[in-house]
Length: 177
Image (cartoon, rainbow, N blue to C red; front, side, top):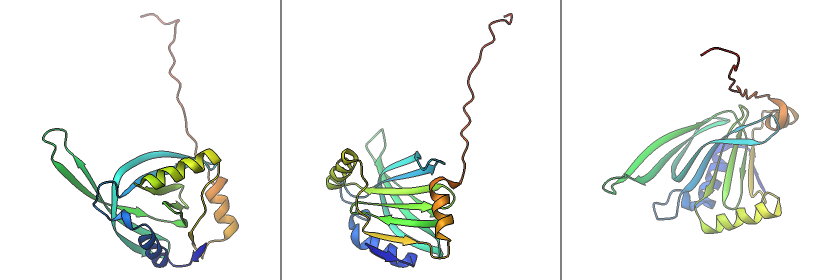
């Protein structure tokens, strides 16, 4: 596993290893997910994008970067191709893990980002990992060097508390209509 201390270096590694993230060919790009991390360490996906192409990266500070992306799709009528570009800001990053077919960006603020390559080999690798019950091998990692490691691991795993309030619906049977 390669370890990096600068965001520029890990981004250069990602673009060299995952070359299909920029490609416009059919079946290229990534499946991008944005997640909120719960106190237990589990994640809830709140947005997922298919056929997401990352065409540029930029470093904003020593632990923040932005991702310029392009999504290509077709309209319902006329089958006209539509392109939409966007910029995703990833701030307060503490860990970036790069795998064979995926990468994950873990932030201190409990909002995480991850992507998987749009590739049949990536799908097979994820199915294999799921049935095995173990995450794949990390090929490269970046850790924010100015964080206290114990504090960072506490915050990334179970330190911050997020309360999800579920309001139950009630109906008063004793009231008059």
